[in-house]
Amino acid sequence: MKEFFKDNKVILTVILLIGLGLRLWNLNKPEGLWNDEYIAYSISMLKFPFDFFEGIKTNCHAPLHYFYLKIWMAIFKNSDFMLRLSSLVPNLLGCLVMYFVGKNYQTKCYSIQIGLACALIGAISSFLIYFSQEVRIYSMIFLLSSLILLYSIKMHYAPSKKNCWWLTFFSVLLILEHTIGFVFVLFNVFGLLAFKQKAKKKKDADDFYIPILAGLILCLPLIPFLFRIFAHPTYFSQWWAPFSWSKIFFYFTDLFSPVLKNITNSPMSFYHQIIRNDVINVGFILFAIIPASIVLFLIIKSNIDSKRINKYFLAVFTATFLTVLIASIAGKIIFLTKYLTELYPILILMAAIGWAELNSKNSKIMLATVYIFMSLFFIIVSHTSAIRLVREEGQRLPVVAMQDMGIQKNDKILFLYYPKTHFTKYYNDSDYIASSINKYNFPLVLEKGDTYDAYKNGHELYKVFFLENNKEKVEKRLDEVVFSKMKKGERFFIVDLTSVSLFDSKSLKNIAKNEIRYKEIPFLYLISSYIRNSVIEIASSRLTYLNKKQSYNWMIYEFQY
Image (tube, rainbow, N blue to C red; front, side, top):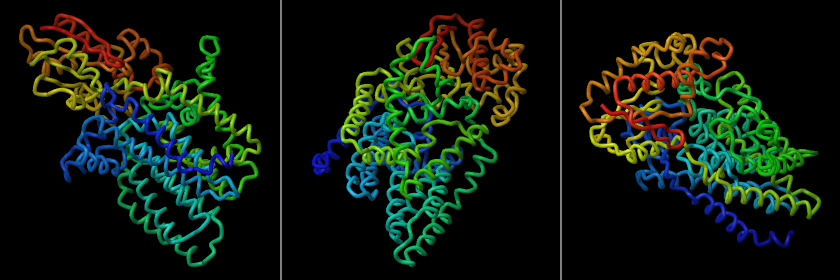
C-alpha cells in the first residue's frame, strides 16, 4: 500500500483529470440558467459602479461573487457554457487544495494517503459536481473553506504571522462570499484558539491576534448588510421549504453519496425514501445509504481517541452545524445541504483520516472500492445523477416550447412567478409584448400590502381571495397589460411554473376552509395557485383556447383573440 502511494503526483493528476472529466460532462445545459443562476448573472451584468452596487443591495447574498462574475464575463463573455465554467474552475481547485489539506495533517506515515483520499472524495463528489455546473456561489465557498482549513492546520502545527495573515485573508473572502459564512469563520477562530498547540515562539502566538483584529475591521462594512437580511429580511425563504428532521439525513447522503435530494428542497420524509408503498427501495439503500454510512463510519473512527486537532475539527463542525440547525428550526433559514458547504472540507478530511488509519489493509481496499464504485457507477449510469439532473426551472425551456408552438412577432406573453426580464437571455424582447404577474409584484396587482407584508402575513391577508375566488383585480390587470393590446388573430401565451402552482380553484378553496392544513401549506404555493387559476379562467372566458405544452416544470397555455 505504501509503495502504491509513493508516486503521489501521478495519482493526484489522474484524480484531478477524472474530476475534470466528470465536471465537463454535460456542462452546457440545454435548459439554460434557472432563477438563482440568472439573478447572479443579471446583477453581474449591471453597469459598474452605481447600477451594480444597487443590484447587490437588493439581493440576499454577500457581494464578492458578483465581482468575480463581472471580471470573469469581461474576460470570457457571458455564454451559458462560459458562465458555468466560472464555477467549474474554483470547484476543481478546491479538490487540489484538499490534497494539501490532507498532506499537511501530521501523522507518522499516512499524510500522503490522507491527501490523496481528500482529493479523490472531492473529485467524485456528486454534490461538488452538481455545483461545478451551476452559476452559483457554492464552488467558490468550497474553495475558500478548503483554503481556510489548510491554513488553520498550518496555524495549529506551526503558528506564524504569515500563516495567520493567509488564514485571515481567506476568512474575510468567505464572509464576503457567503451571507452566513461569518458563522463558520467565528467558530473556526474560536476553535483554533481553544485547541491550538503551544507556539514555539511567544511572538508567533502574539501575532495571531493582530490579523484577526484586522479581519474584523475589514468585515465591519458588511454589518449593515447582514442586519438588513436577518433583522428585517427583504428576501424570504421559509415560505417554500418548511423544516423537517429528515433534512439532517439528506445532508449526509447529499455530501457522501451520489444521490442528491436536498439541493433545492428535500422530500419531507427520509424513511419514505427507504420504504415506498410498503416496498423496500433497494436503489436508495445501495447508492445513498451504503456510501454515506461508509463515510460516517470513517468520520466517527477518526474521532475515537482522537488527537487535539481532530477535536478542533469536530468542535467547529458541531458548533456551526447546530447554529444553522437551530436557525432553521426557528424559521430563519432553510436547512439545505448547500448552505453548509463550509463544513464539507472538514468532513472530507475526517473521513480521509478515518480511512488512512484503518489497521487492516484489506478493509482499506474494500471500503475504498465500494465507495468509488457506487459513486462512479451511479454518476455514469443513472439518469438522475449530478451530471444529468435537469434544472427543471431552466428559463430557456419555456422559450423553446413557445417557439415550438409557433409564437410570432407581436404575440403576447404573460409570465407567472418570475419577472419577464428573467427570460430575455433566450429571446429578443422586442419581438413580443411580454408582461408578468410574479412573486415580487403580485401585491401590487392584487392591491394588498407590500411584498414583505404579503409573505409575512399572507395567510391572513389573502385568505378571502382563496375562499371567494374573486378574480376582479386580476382581470383588471390583464385588461391593462394584455387584452387591450391584442388584435384579431394574435395569440396569448401564459407561462406557468407548475412546481409552485399546485392547487386548482376547488382544492384551494377547500384548503382555505381547513385551518390546520391552511397554516401548514407554504403561502407561496397558495398565492401562485390562485394567480394561475385566475389567469387561466379569465383567458378562457375572453379568448379561444388553442393548446398547452409542458416542458419539465413549465406549462405553456396558448389562446387566440
